Length: 248
Image (tube, rainbow, N blue to C red; front, top):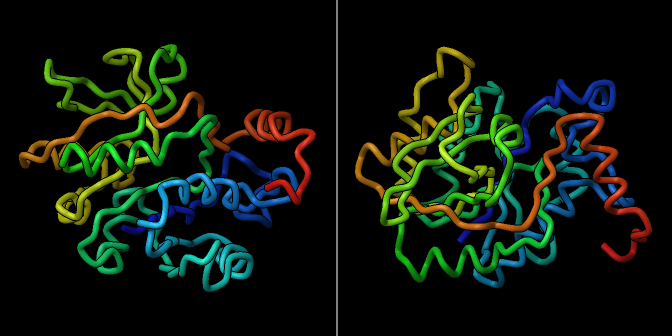
């Protein structure tokens, strides 16, 4: 199993912090945000054989920091020249994933009380095509910034809505997903969304469902912070206040 880290974006909403820095590399408690993110992902255990980074903006910062391995797990880098969305990044990484299941993470997200080990275990126990990380009990104002999932009576996802004006329920979708390689052809087929001009996560996963794949939600943690504003940066720094660099 591999970890797929999407870290190519420019982080325009975080300017001026990102004028010279990839937002995933902004330091939190003395280490880049991406360092903390990967430590969480590696909680999945020794099943992880490789970390694949999709990089773009200021990619040399990521490559220089992490090098050829992290915590004993080898690293591969893929350069995304055209920043055309999550599905575009996944399509680009498809050959490197080599037909294996993968844990996908967005490099600018960080969970509180993560349960990624439980998520990976549930994925293999249930035999589904994919688990989409969610948080339960979220207010509509937060779901509108992310994505919403609608469930069948059996608990499978049957619809996705990106940044919905009216969410389906109180589940907020995250970038953390555990997926079978059967989902990858549909990332390649995902068209550019006419509204957002990106090849989007929700459009890709909706294609998977349309072609008969089975996806379920999984509570990936208790809280998430997405580094996309000055306010979220200050919140991250506050949460890590008092944590020393040698403790992470």
